[in-house]
Image (tube, rainbow, N blue to C red; front, side, top):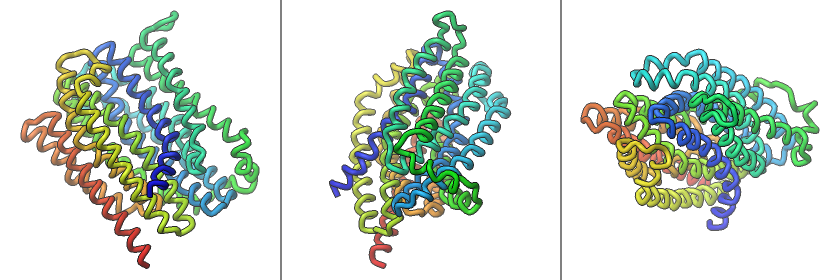
Amino acid sequence: MRTEALNTIKLAIPIIIGELAQMALHIIDAAMVGAISYKHLAAAALVLNTVNIPFVLGIGMTISVSQMVSMANGRRDGQQVSHYLFNGFCLCTVIAVLISLLLVYNRSILLHMGQDPEVAHLAMPFMQLVGFSIIPMLLFMTLKQFTDGLEYTKTAMLLSILAMPLNIFLNWLLIYGHWGFPRLELVGAGWATLITRTFIFLVLGAIILKHGTFRRYMAVSNKQWKFKFSTIKELLHIGVPSSLQLGMEAGAFAVSGILIGTISAVAQAAHQIALSCASFTFMVSMGLAQAGSIRVSNAFGRADWKKINTIGKSTLITAVMYGIFCAIGFTVFRHTLPEFFNKNTEVLQMAGMLLLFAAVFQVSDSTQAIAAGLMRGIKDVKIPTILITIAYWVIGLPAGYALAFHYKLGPAGMWLGFIIGLTLASVFLITRFLKMVKRQQNA
């Protein structure tokens, strides 16, 4: 089991680094914008919370590419790998454009969400640019899922790392107006995000088309790059439930953030700081989840349930150990971490308190993400989606709302709801995975 854990970690490390680099872009944006004022930080938080739900739904669709590519690769079927790449890219392109248009042409919704009026008006132009940047980002994620599904994970990782200094430099130019550029503040962060995301998509696309590693898949493009509705149906079978699973959790956090914003701009800014920290650690769990899912999917293509059992259990144990490590880190550094984002005393105090709640749910957050990934690997997606919906939306979010507003606990109440929802999701998903694997092994 130790060997399987190490193999999963080895595959996960480049994915994790890439995920952390992408998450770091959001944190860097928040920190650089937060240096202007806490209301600019709150405006950025409002947009990210609003965009996050449809964006994560789009990411869920891209996951179907890695799952189908990995299964075809497990069967050593390079023709199907190429076929899934083309159809997956077509599907995700349509979805990316639809999501982008939805966000851009409905950005005025920010003015009707009960937020601080100044915050809402600051957020409007930023929303437009972030909405457009959804297209190159989801297309980059689609190509990344293709390379990850083949277990070539380093290319996308290196591009994600390269994006960090590029984004920081563009932020420096456009947010603050250096080197003769106009001082665009939050709008500057939006332009930097759009340019950076477009750049990494174009570079990864060129690598896949031209590099020798992927030549065998490009060589059969004349035969395999054909739109096929049955293939789209296969991708949707994985993609739709995956989107809903990710959307349930992201949506719960996003809605909670919007509700917290109705309390005050200070509460919104503090929530965004704590959530940025928790989201950063969650990216490691997502990397482990994807690596575990890819390896399980590969074994599933060969119907090797013994291997699936070992990979699954070893990855879950790794998740528990990682969650404990993060919980300790948040507890120890709860007063230090918020200072990277803002200097307002009220914001810092509240963010430090919320990080204690984040520490409590680190283990359950990590294990539920990995259990969901393992279930995707064995193509069990419908029941887990229902279980996740119950955990977050039937129990967790309503409990958080009641604690925050009915019992007057404020942001702390919403974060208690996170703890309840994540813990239930973890218990539900782990139990189902272990039962399914046991049933198949005894069959």
